[in-house]
Length: 283
Length: 93
Length: 234
Image: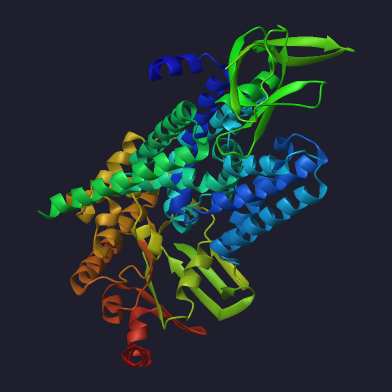
């Protein structure tokens, strides 16, 4: 079979279609969200929260319930607490994230090893950390959850984009002229928590930061308008994920790492374009 | 892809019943009760395994521990009220 | 008309007061300049007035009909703002954010007002540029434009000439003076004592507590001007 025949054949499978749908939705949200997180210097929050989510998954594995029921609420709560703690200046952004991130990972892994009755612990763990094939083995709950949450996230970002810009660019100014910035921060924290949990299915805990950071950084290198940055970041994120899923299906590479490799490649290209533009300006 | 397909076959069997598959993996057995094929995913960290049965007596299970390719149809059978799924192998390559 | 009054205000952080017993008022059309050494609490005072910081004790009283959404604040810039990817227009228009309610897009009136402000401040040449490609002086002007979008009559400026060269500083104070002449009430923190004496109507001098509050003329007549000048030189 040539490549196109193969792709056509794969697209006949339900689980491949699901993978593409959820992959597109998740990377769209990550692309948009990434811009805010990078600009607010919360780049590593994806990492921290995904490790906390891993801790929650471990507990769910031990207790025997579906991981989503624990992962979502715990991750959301931690996201809100993180953003609140760092806004009050009591703990610096990076220390807070480091503590939570490593602590959750270690304790989660410890608990799974002590208490779990699963036959193959390391593959469960590995799958959560690296995504492996989670995107190709989604349940319908996963798919519906992704669709509903993405609609909510997109609606929020479109309807409130000017307010979100004001709060991101200058929280003091926004607050002084009457915006209830804490509400926006809390909503953002909830959205971050939800997206991280979903993104773990695509690329796994360890690689989430890449999904958040690279498309945003690529866009920031190339564009000077905040609207264009967000649009480009979402497009890049979606295209990279689709490419990554196809390449991984066709050549058997791990999905998460493939997507991240493409993200890095695109970032380097954007960086080169920026350098070329600057050289042209100088001349 | 193979790993995911097999997992999905086992999660939602109704979509795959009576379809033909080519599977690459190692053949094993637990003595004489049943045979299976198994393998890993791309990162070598997750395992899959699926029961195989040979109906045609002219075909024998390979004794090698290397990878082989099996061609077969996905079938179900009911024993003591429990349904189990297996690949009915028509050929080993 | 009295817009703002502070009574026995003590300001600080985490229950610790850095400046106590501040009493002053701001009337419509005033240009109040707040001066004092670094660390004397000037920024904190502004933040307390604006509700960004809770006071330790005392009262901040705005006149009853004054709409708090009608405040134009020009805070000190943070490092990451200077690199922010946004066009000048986007930054300026964000001044309207609190007048929009739930409306997601800026309307024609707002866009027109932004254009008028851009003309008034002389920003036309670089309005399509990215904020991060501007010089310090240009960025301050853009932030002032944003503040003017947020208000018609009440500006609060925190060291707006920080990091600007002498020419940009002079231009900035000329603008402030013009705005005040047109009726804008201004509260401003400043270190440029000579410029301040030119355009201020009232002076507030802080050092652990209120050292002076009164009209510019009273301040000049008191010995305090000399104190401040010599302290600034040391």
